[in-house]
Length: 111
Length: 113
Image (cartoon, rainbow over all chains, first blue to last red; front, side, top):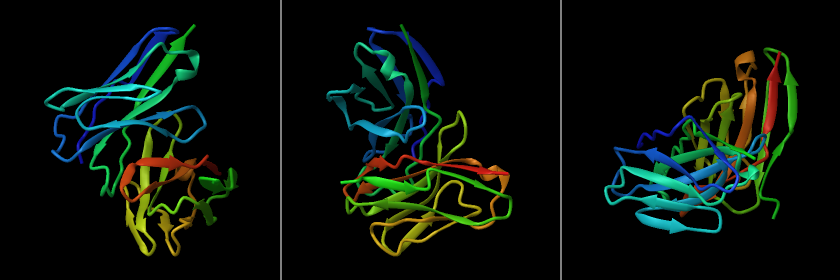
């Protein structure tokens, strides 16, 4: 299993773009990168997944450089409701067995 | 679809008591898992199952048992509750071809005194 490293916490302000970077130096060729969001008192929610370059959906964008040793989750124009913990996971999406969550990044958005 | 349901929402146990946390999903997902989350911490995998009749241990399996007799249900049994098992327990499920896209239940908040 590829180990991931994320910042413990980040602060930002409403309306700003927030970028959370995850390091995964020993990512395997078949591994995908998946991000989850967890609001207080709720279970995590899948937000985005990618293999290389850039993936965008209605919630976020995911940027993956060519060497794939890191990835960046980008949240455009954040609001107070984006305050949450964000988890980066790495593994093969279709046959993974142990799906391990790290400690995540606690994002706090201020008015 | 109800998605992933968990019962009970809250539970208080005395040390040494046993109980079963229930988890059910109606999405016909093959993969199911149990996590625990201690205050201010990330999720830790307890047990998981890749299909009916197949279970395996995660990161922190001691003190817990699971079984998977049907695709829909994946109960978690605490054999003899200890205060260290005070935590929030989440059940999750995902489709065979997209295991990392897990759907989580609302959680069970367990306190052991």
